[in-house]
Image (cartoon, rainbow, N blue to C red; front, top):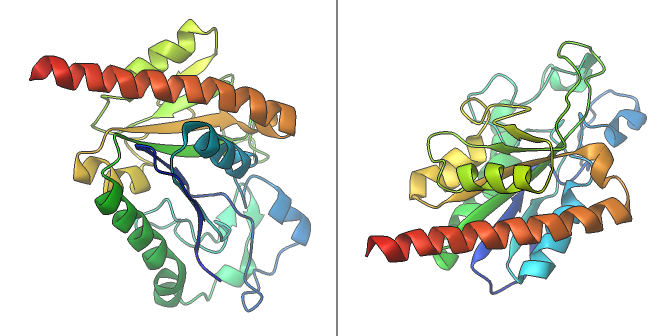
Length: 243
């Protein structure tokens, strides 16, 4: 099975979804209650549907991961402690205690990121969009309930993020600026494929209860299609003014 689901497209925006799947290969036993695979610890709920629909609306390609982040978190550097989680939101993942780290990196992480790198080289996207979702509250209670409907994450390159935050707020959407996580800490895929290549990017987080059904997905895809178009055009205007 491929580590990447590809959505074809010829547009100038590339969409990525690191946590699109809750799939665990049959030869990997995580030692957990299967019901946990439907929770946010295993998958970004709604993110895959949003990514596919958004790609269709924009006519651009998308790459979606096909393995659960409980197997390996593709949005982490290979030396990150949480790459193969032993505990997630208070749930112990006993099958990962003795996991072969190098083998999982070679089997899942490396080919996923090779696929993204090859797509970026071939496409030269005007904008890279990373789609994630977050839960309104952690079961462990280790952080306060999250009031945001959406968030925009970024590290050093805020060219796309700043106008995106302002645009979402202008629509009356409760928007987190580097919330519910900071892109200065959790931004591995964008650091590698956007910041390192000089490609403008949007790291989008949507609260998962808002995209847990088809109506919610459709509503947010309409919002995001307008947002991405606005940001892409804003960046193009800035480049034109600079020449």
